[in-house]
Length: 158
Ligand code: NI
Image (cartoon, rainbow, N blue to C red; front, top):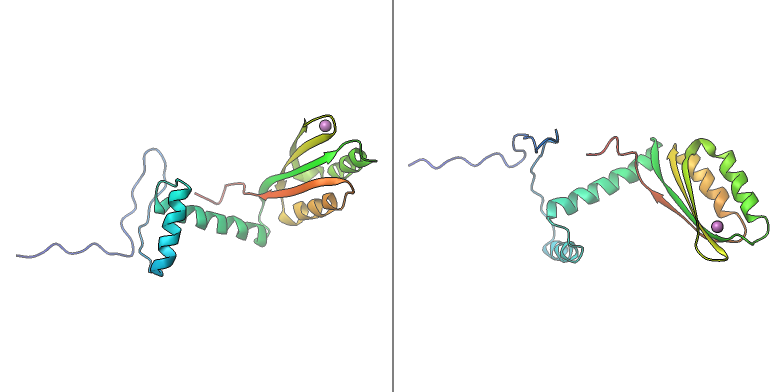
């Protein structure tokens, strides 16, 4: 009796998933067993439904990082916290934002309490332009916090 042949391990035929046009490729990788055990434990702790999703998330994070390094158009958010009573801080922050208005697509200002403001700048553009704005904002005296969520336009990711 002839046994059925194994399917090729490198790649299975592409197939459609629901209404999405995404095609799937299956591949196998060899890793250190202890490394995989730790990774699986992390996946469980994060309540990630499958190892495939966890690996896909890692690959996308790596590709987003590459978009920033390569100078592609990117998107993200700059988050700031400051005391609006501090001398000239509102004026200075406004000046920087006007200078960089092309990279800012939206702003949100939340009065956290009597003194503190949370400001979120949604940004989109060249990484270098966004980086320059971040450098200028970080240099503003009196800011309690500045951070960048370096995200993506999503156009080159699936
Ligand atoms: Ni405020």
